Image 1 (cartoon, rainbow, N blue to C red):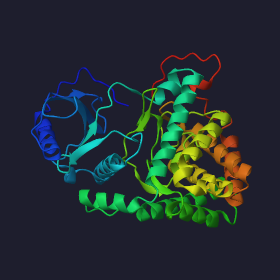
Image 2: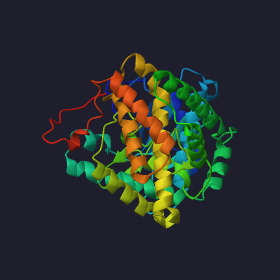
Image 3: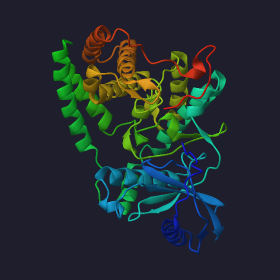
Image 4: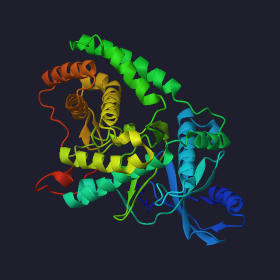
Length: 405
């Protein structure tokens, strides 16, 4: 979400001149921009400016998104900043090339490798999915969530079979390879350490646990019928919501991968989000029905209940494991707080969500049994830890005062 900071009065002259040069090359004529209005507070990892177009044909305004770094150029910045910049640029550009009836994201007007910025369509005044979930009523939240599910389904449907086009585009932006192999190997090693940690806790690991985990990772990282461009971080604050349409922003985790890794975000309580709370099961079911309906025209496998259940359980297992790897060691010593939810509640709730899903579809018995035992140990250690609360929009008689991180 973009937040206007009225106190910010920096001089963006050199940045705006670089932006004007990119626009002149892209649009084929000179462009002059006015001083930008900062939309992000200082200290954020990106600088976001809304800039009026004062001269030259084009939109009335546009958004400049620059990596915030003390480095002289992007190539001297931290490796993670470089990677997320190119992922964001590639995703925004790629989605701009799709001939979709409804755009999935803001149009991308180009970018600059050295200065580290991309140029995006200005969608004007809008909110994000955060607002209806935290500050509005159930009807508004359901409408927003179903629109979000439909957008994810349409995004995946439109990009199935398009990986070669994405790779060609990526190669025009950066020599870095398009590969997740290193990430998968690193995650597998982390899971091996996690398994040892669980055994030391006294949570017996099923003999077939490692085999099932390996099978899950292979299924989720090998191209197949559900292989599409995924956002990778489709959190509520990465969803532009106007009430009439939904678009996605911030593709810093975007890549080609298994579509259900995005589609299970609601079921798995938005696993990478500061604003993680719980949705009612009936709403999750509605979201997945809407998602599948949007996906099926480009992915007939999504209409097959067996194949969809396999994918659903594997994606839930992945997010459960990611949460354990990321948070369990620290949470055993003390409970932290991220955004609106405690870390221990996140761990308990994602274990519960995976177990419920795997039991419902009779999948992954070794992962399910191991998760059961870990959950039992954690409940014994943390008897006062509740599961994640329902989002305020779904709480009866909730006091909808502002909720802050």
